[in-house]
Length: 299
Image (cartoon, rainbow, N blue to C red; front, side, top):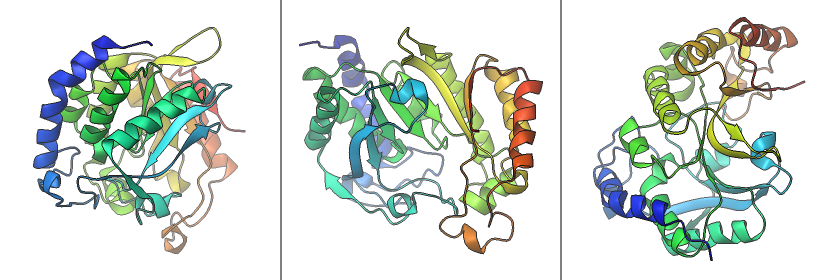
């Protein structure tokens, strides 16, 4: 049995600090400061218990993540963002799912590895970070060894991210907005652009550019997702400029075009439609302008 003693040591040193952030919740920039260890809830409506909607081998992620055996994906319910167009709103907003213990979560991770997953893909993990860290500790002691993917909305606390240093192998954040007015209107987070940039810088500091092995499978590094929105609500040029100038021109970017008006977006006069070909091509233009050559566009 393979035992990752280094990660076990890191978690054992940091787990108490992570739970202290939970006891006066500062896991994300909202800093609700409720005591979630006692069941109190803040913006994300989550207390101490971990809730997940599903766990499975997922083949719909970017090619180096899904690979040929699938990504071992765990979808956590709830979210620290309030995106009115969320395509997964039954999970993120309505919190459809089932509570699991830390021990049960550890077993789920080990089962995904046993099923052949290339990695463990933690989807929307931000608000459950201490509990996930605790589950990883149990799983590592039982032989978990595949890479850990932190798949998030990008609205993160640098304080919590630093506790993940050396534990998370692959960061896969969104960069949703460059304009605070847009992030306030559509996700209820006016400070998103600043907090997002600080978080992504910290992620890059920890893991660097994405490293892909000879089989095309990601092993470590940063992969940024950017969803093109109608009327350039996302501010794509500014985000791509930031990546090129303040991170690395070798950053892998997934430029996504699958937006459709879900949840409450159907009633909004700006984003109540799919994007046009011209809008996506405009974002691609900035990819070329800033010489960002790594990643994926959607045809």
